[in-house]
Length: 125
Image (cartoon, rainbow, N blue to C red):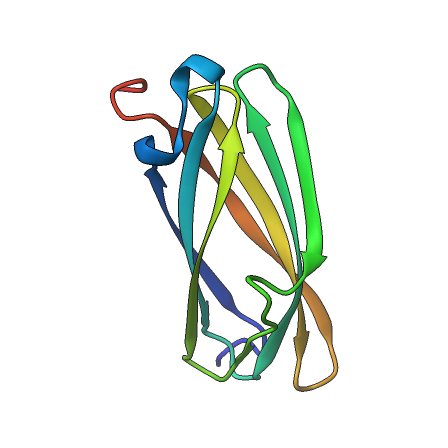
């Protein structure tokens, strides 16, 4: 039997050297997130919460409505993909977080976004 609420998160990160300034400790990354509803109930992404940590352990928390100005409604087996970005003061950092979702059945639930690494190429092996 399918779970009513099931969301699969996939992440992909790119370092953007043309927008970064290594001498000024400005490292820019884009990340693409794919959100797939594997549950049997349609669900809307209501808000997001990110925890971004750089190599100095400085933490930025970002909370807001939706993603990229949208609150996508995902039907069963439907995906939504978006790209956003962040700036770090170090060559390496991590991001993790959660999405707050609301099912068509009226139930609110949280989806964890597993931690992923932001890294300038050739810094981590």
